[in-house]
Image (cartoon, helix red, strand yellow):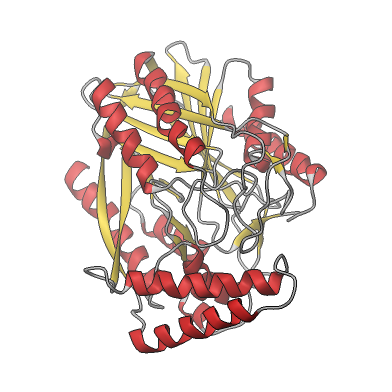
Length: 432
């Protein structure tokens, strides 16, 4: 084993006022009117003296693959970092700008987007340029009231946050990562900019623990909201306080060690998609185009916006079925094994059943399953969600239209879960 080296960095990535925020409806044009809290990009670098790995947490909904690839080019050139060792995750706040290219769910702003790779690279540069010796350990804490199942009444929720603690050589707390599953949506479709409850909780904890850096890694929250969806600033404050009051006492129980074994990589995995027939699509496109052209009502109404969305989605589908392999999507999965723990990232909105299944079958006692990483893809729902009414159907059938990819086959979530379990066991066999 080797001596742990660690470093952190942070940059502000708050957008200018007036940019469209992401989510809550087609062509909503929900433009920001006030900065409630600056959005942050926080980077954590870990090294064993030979290999360096950097994991980033942004107060953003997602990051388009183009932004990630630009960041990888910058940090390879400036710091010699292997792109497979640089993972960019997002807390998935719905009170931030459209940093993913959607069909109608928030306009992409090229000027703002162009600033982000440089800001990400700056935070990463701070982290790798200021590494020092430290100690590391894992723990968990119960947070039984923070997440709510939005698909099944009384359904499963995330009960625990997984924690990673990093101390300096003298044993003083310096870095904390939190892995928990619940959509950051307490502000609903407001026009305030902020990181919602994860950023609120982190700001409170960092004020109380002067000099400590904290990162939030969003978990498997495809079917989970936080409590108080759309209830506003008071609800966000309460959720941030709950996160703080739960996490801080648990940190004292985590033992740390200076000895570290690190290994990590990034791999691509295929997921099966349904390929629609061309002729019905073309006929539907003509029909929606006619409805849009003949619409005589309020063009700011939801009905008109929905018609435009249906028209544009048919256009996108026709583009997608002309790609070389429309029957599958190749997604990026990254991992970092740290002693008896592992950080496992993916770009999905994974339903909790799959995240729990991965953790339960993992050969590592501390397994962080982290979503919204390296590119935007969308929900991985359960087979039953493709045919039942409610939010499950929305996640399985409707949401892929927003994320600009074809609908997954119903078994895709189970395929993905089994792929990740197999990956973890291969890592264990190879690396110990």
